[in-house]
Image (cartoon, rainbow, N blue to C red; front, side, top):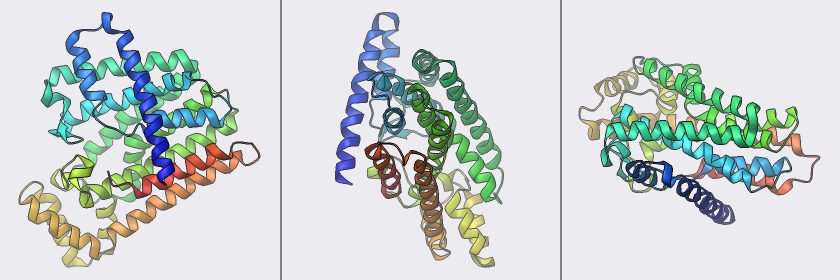
Length: 330
């Protein structure tokens, strides 16, 4: 795991170098305020998982070109754009332990910077992965917006099903991670079987990533995650730990959980401690983690498509990334 972390840090630093060079090359064409917003929003931490997946999947399919890093930038840019906008939508004041972009600058600047990154990311995908890659990228983008609308509607529901939850997180998180894997394979000129396998790997990886994120929203250390714990409860969001706990809870525990969910931000600290105890008592966190583990196993099963090829190192790296996601604490 230490070797993997070292590699992730090394590749993340490489991706950052490409992004800085890319933004510097546009310096004369972009407004100074826009440059400041992008520099603040893009280089404020982040694991660079999405561009890393583009690079690894490209290598897995036989293309070791450095252009994979430039293609990977597009996925980090789009991811950052969604965060700029999401923080405004959710009213989140901080991101990774620092003021959110709209708090550091203002709402208009954050929205426009996100729009700029979205447009630029599409241009990059078109340049390096052609129309087929761009179609995948745009499907993911549309799916993300659809996922946000699902989440808006789900916020009104206090009896959310597992299916509703999975549909929302597939759009919100899974599709962009899946597209990073798929477009990396398309860039490499992979056959349809390989492209499909890597897309499915990414879908499962993305679901696991979001499930762990939802567990950390209750149990995480804000000093590590850079986010306050209990946001989902405060916003009345039904996430998997709560959904699964409600399936096992007796009538008293169900009533308590529903009251805490409806109360939202009222008595947040007391409510959160109580909710964590009740979810734990009904195995909500344990069961949610098992869902994430199954998703990672399903992701790794897709890599069997490449068993006959001499790509053991890349496959092992993708497997390790899955287990890294299960163990992450931020």
